Image (cartoon, rainbow, N blue to C red):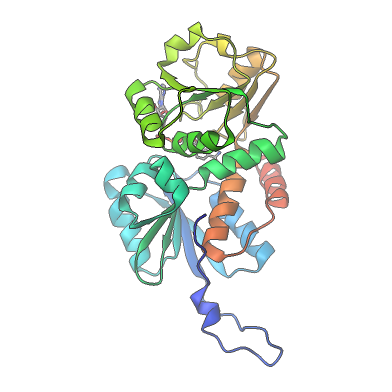
Length: 301
Ligand code: NAP
């Protein structure tokens, strides 16, 4: 499990006569970094977590194109920032940047949570996998164990998802990606067992429908025809889109049109992975259920 870091500001304060520790009034700074980033709900989610737990922090958005990523992260840390969530397209770059790596991030080769430690080092963790698993198993009540599973996409987010699936042991996992080599490299990194395999997207038409189909590609924030063979889906399929949007996403639309038993967006994963990041940074675990309700209401999903 990733380490937790006590808030140095609060421990440095003298205790008042009631035994409570006085809080420093300067909030700790956090942000999400990615490109594009203007659509991110992470500032809202972390504000709700902070209100719920009484943690003193601010959380903003940082836009960083790939060439700017290292410079912007180092500047944020040098200016006193305490942690960053990392999103598209920087999760592998964040893994390279981190000097200490949590076990989930090590396994996935991708980082979505950076912490700037008191000794000036950069720590990297990955909470995507646990967020994905918690949303499907707890919020949607679907057990992933023993299921025939298809994961579409082999980018930064898929790394955490496939690493989590390795733990829950599906009966078979097919990892399909436009660039097959990227999928093969991922299974190699994970030292995946023989029931995990890769294929190019068009070759999926040779497969029987899957019980679980996960869209971990970055396709589908805009309406478009998706390059996935519809034979992957049947009425037994639980279709899960990592992409989330106030509108119905193209993948959810596609899976529903082709008869999926259930098709959902990744709002719950978004909140669950954020809750895990918050716990790493602050040492306190927020209750994610009311925050997910508020986020869904704000997005009017
Ligand atoms: P990424 O590292 O940029 O990977 C993108 C993936 O999409 C790759 O597999 C890429 O294939 C594939 N792809 C892109 N364009 C394609 C196209 N035209 N046709 C076929 N495949 C295409 O992105 P990421 O970090 O993995 O994120 C993926 C998505 O997950 C994003 O939309 C992100 O917002 C979402 N996400 C959601 C959550 C959540 O909490 N719900 C968490 C993390 C990520 P190639 O390898 O061939 O380029």
